[in-house]
Image 1 (cartoon, helix red, strand yellow):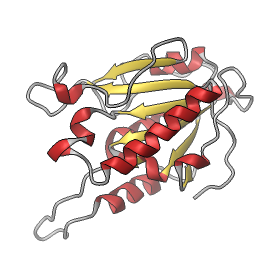
Image 2: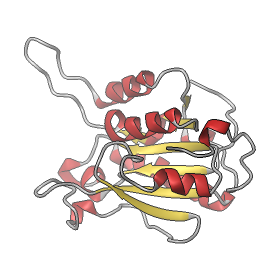
Image 3: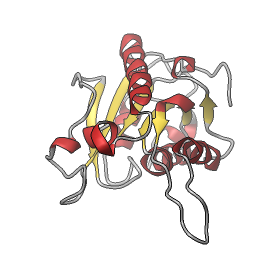
Length: 203
């Protein structure tokens, strides 16, 4: 875990959609995740940071099928120059989307990533950001996933909290993991002075 991290100028909220945080299909402890993501959103807005809501376009008959009730974003969006929705079809939020261009235009150096699922879209998006030279801050209590069911001859069931922790560990030592959402410090877009050269023109 990292303490006293430098400020970031963007918040990426990954797939906080109705299907994944409400009803029978909700991730364990969904209320906690929503509360922590909501706190990050409030703080990022207050500080003038860029907010990106990633919204997954699920296939036909999926819980997040495009246009279905489960596909809708759970948290209210305030569209504007500092808050956007980017739709995606892959785990990696950069793959086939305008995310790299949006971050580059806002001259972002560091991002905070939160949402669902820890080992899938959150992890893939965080890793892609690291590969593009961005600082990535990952608040431990603001991402979540499902339990892994038991697999005969392989393992017993794996609790969701352990899956999330392993997903963090798998990102390596470049990601800045903080215990709580309130540990993330935001700054306004255009004031993130730690912008690395490798992130000036993300691929």
